[in-house]
Amino acid sequence: EPEVTQTPSHQVTQMGQEVILRCVPISNHLYFYWYRQILGQKVEFLVSFYNNEISEKSEIFDDQFSVERPDGSNFTLKIRSTKLEDSAMYFCASTILASGSETQYFGPGTRLLVL
Amino acid sequence: GNSVTQMEGPVTLSEEAFLTINCTYTATGYPSLFWYVQYPGEGLQLLLKATKADDKGSNKGFEATYRKETTSFHLEKGSVQVSDSAVYFCALIENSGYSTLTFGKGTMLLVSP
Image 1 (cartoon, one colour):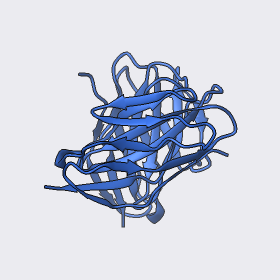
Image 2 (cartoon, rainbow over the protein chains, first blue to last red; image 1 turned 180 degrees about the horizontal axis):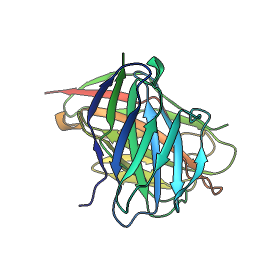
Image 3 (cartoon, rainbow over the protein chains, first blue to last red; image 1 turned 60 degrees about the horizontal axis):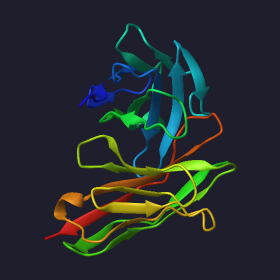
């Protein structure tokens, strides 16, 4: 069964460093998402991406964040200058259609720790 | 705005016990409702969903009914197994053109033999 994959599974970085989290969505999906979950808190939407551009973003997704689909398979989230509060589990998701009834398929997540 | 509230965990049960995890929501429109499950070390997997009022979603013995009058989508299972131990997330998407999931905080279920 096709699945969303994410790398790395864990990343430890120093405050102020740049990190890139990678995702490979399901191959025939068209809409891609990043969510995050700070330990003990809710899973929160960050950004959605369609047709090589951002379609929606949350207040969390400020200028420190960017997303890119550099080739036909990868979808990346970049944090330019990490802060302590960026420590969280980051989930990538994808779906065929952006409608309320379509299932979003999630990857296993990348646990980011900023020291 | 939209929000989802779930009962606090962990929920600790013995095998074959009855499970209920409460979920209520607030939405401006008419959302679709979902339960996702996260097994240890894995990603979020869709467990079941319901897209309109009075629909019942079901999968792997789990059920949840979309109750518009009480804005609820409680998860139930008649007889839990040790393998059901996981974190369960209730979530919604507005059916108004937006496609972002709004999640609850998650409820951890621990089932002992």
